[in-house]
Length: 128
Image (cartoon, rainbow, N blue to C red; front, top):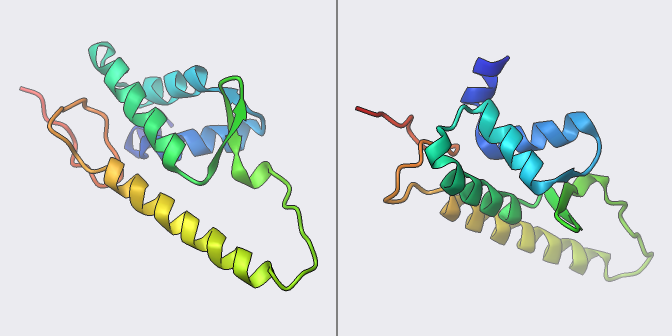
């Protein structure tokens, strides 16, 4: 299973961990678990943690629960009101989700620093 976890993007692995545990997790514990499963080198942990934390902040699947805890948005009950504004609010929500998805993709673009941490679109890091 470790090999399968290593090939999964860090953000998706964080989602899987939360989904399996079915409870909120302190952000540092979640990040450490993901990066340990991905076998990120210790000297790259700080940079990789910052990258993964940013991705979690930008990904609409995750919800900040307060005091450093993160959970999944799907666990938050939807407040439904019977009004004509439902169509408008659905459009606004879809627009916000699309904006967040675009920003997440921008954040996941490779940058000048090689942390050895891979996003969905990154090539595996090669070390000499």
